[in-house]
Length: 386
Ligand SMILES: Cc1ncc(COP(=O)(O)O)c(C=O)c1O
Image 1 (tube, rainbow, N blue to C red):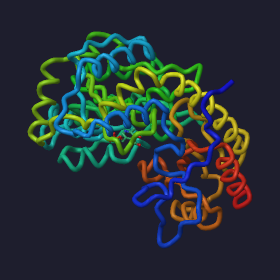
Image 2 (image 1 turned 180 degrees about the vertical axis):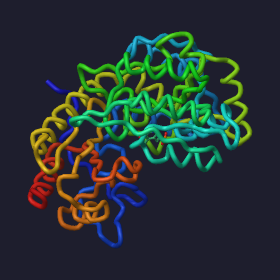
Image 3 (image 1 turned 135 degrees about the horizontal axis):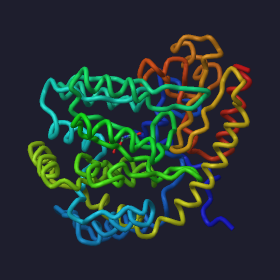
Image 4 (image 1 turned 30 degrees about the horizontal axis):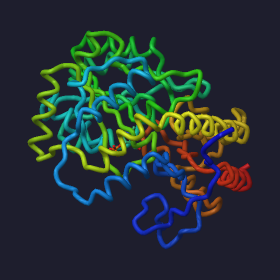
């Protein structure tokens, strides 16, 4: 018997909620865009928050041994990956970690590569830090995305790429990279002395039989050039709590990243983030396992509604709670697609082209909501387009 009820309809229409905000005065739509969930977090978080709140003293706080131990044992249990306590560097957010890592590992004007389509702040963080953005597009064959290794290696060579910003598992295409794929990618980076900044925020949200492999766990050589960005925030729906961790085995890199954080006067994470991390990493596993089963059913609902031969077909995600809808069969421009989904179907999605040119003709749908809401959205989309 399931212990947690993901079918409950929670009211998220509170001031400041990003996902549920109105757009041009319009609020009567199902919001399936921003990547957070409509489920309440694991009950252990509320208990942990209550304890912190009751304490009533919210002074400066460092992470303690229990916090570090909770991250270490999570990696050991969930990914069979043994990390050392001193490799763990807490940080308020994954994209903040990515920014600090880019500044620590490269100089202004250096080339940093990403694989598009990808989470759109990747391109921004590279450009905003005055690095050269190099794009290698993923290739898609029959609804399955892969790295184009030839293109990747030639771009690395041609542009003297110093680092790659990698998304694993991949948002938005939902791939969970295999060990073989990661090894190949790693070999290319090592051959050309490119650092790997691996954003693994979706690592826990993987659908069986796929398994997430932390890229740094492949070999000592891989670990020596990698910054892994990890967080409990996607997994346990804690985005606004602002807590994450970098895992950096290489001491020299770790010190450089720490210096970048200090240069930004960033000294750590907040008391609620510390409490939440300890709670979920020690008591949240049963909740997560049930969530993963629920999301598997959601994937099936989508796969049945939008099969491969339909003008809208879903690429069945191996991980994340984000579905990548191939809408090219509708023959609409990206703006038309967005507007018709929003205005005619009443479903707010993310435009695929936001994630890079290669996303044109696609839409990203966040399915982390109760099945009744997902079925309502699916029905609206079918009625509008099919
Ligand atoms: C791949 C990826 N990285 C980072 C983030 C944001 O993480 P943070 O809020 O910790 O910067 C997201 C959020 O959707 C994401 O999908």
